[in-house]
Image (cartoon, rainbow, N blue to C red; front, side, top):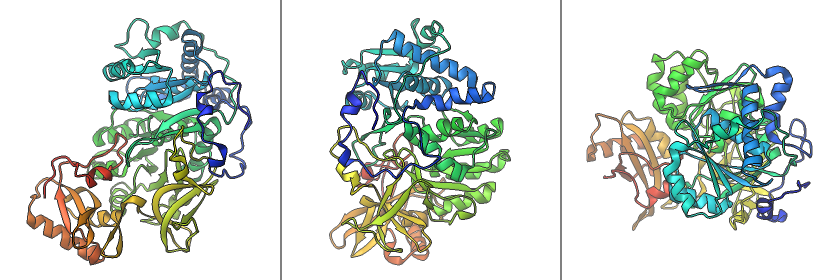
Length: 544
């Protein structure tokens, strides 16, 4: 490691000891980087230098920023951080905004200043923001003024957060926009090392308390130089759009970093329900769309009324892609979905498949630069066809901030993701469940997502989730939480219909012996299903 002369060493001091880090595979082109590296320069300064200054970088319903304009705006933000706020290299800066041009410019400005970006999602409440600020020891914040109530409440509880600069039309007279006007459009990027911390990302909390993961400047480039070239084949003429928030590493990569690394255009939408996203694809001529399986399922019946001819690739991540969802979307649009599994700990997608390499139901093979294995409980590699714990190594990996759970996630050099997978004879990886979601009932191992796939095919089912529920006779039974489509009754007859359907689609011992109808499934802001809440009985409007 070649660290910078950090003035604020909190992040580096709270990295796990190196013997607890995962094994990083030897860096080969294109994943080999200079020892001194400021990642923001690779996205902005480099694209302007290659003659892309007038090309569109960020487009929103309200603004259009060329690469030259985005570079100037990011430079002014960096000037505010260093000259106005007097932040030190290594200072943690909370970025609290929506998917918009200002949030994007701020993210790059934070890195240019040598600070560490702690990007958060706009719907977080004061309690959640307090936890983030306290855990990351955030020194300053750049925030959308519309989000002031929750952040102001959190700031009152966090004396370490000494400065907040608001942006947006409703901002005060000393808003970020006002401050930035007095800063020059040029900025000397901080001389950071490739393995200096660039961002702290918090896990989405699908299993409980979120963890803070730290990633280096070289990691930011590595995710752009691994998955997109292999599966998206990005060109400068591509137009990216989608729904995941920039505060979610899926969204940060898919909607900002991937397009700008290629000199392409990023369309950012503050809110994109199914009809809005479909409209945006048609309006902006989007070629690559990234969203969740739930969104693809919701968009499918609306797709025929929109012009989607520009769309050439779709990306699904955040949770497992049901085979039924893939089939119905591709039938309706003619556009294939690139499925992928990633993790906040790994920063982005590390197993995927595209084009003729897609096998419906399989996630895919390791992205170039990564290797994977299926391990038993003792850490031994299992043969093909055996379900076990997914483990991965590559150019990125888990480094929790001062968290004893580092030793659970990293074992013998592997990142053990918490997912149950099996690998077939051809090296394809097939998702089974989260390891804590495998259901053992009467001696049978049952993967909840397999039962979900069977139920989703039925016309009555809008959404569903399957967990194990305690049972005096069997120890555990399969229980399904089902959101019904309009026109179907929440009664015993529908329960029997769905159970009979499941028995014909999968082995009868896997069918849901209990079904509870709910108004909605509990999800994180990023759309990930929170099965632990279902196991605890916390589902909106639930009743059998």
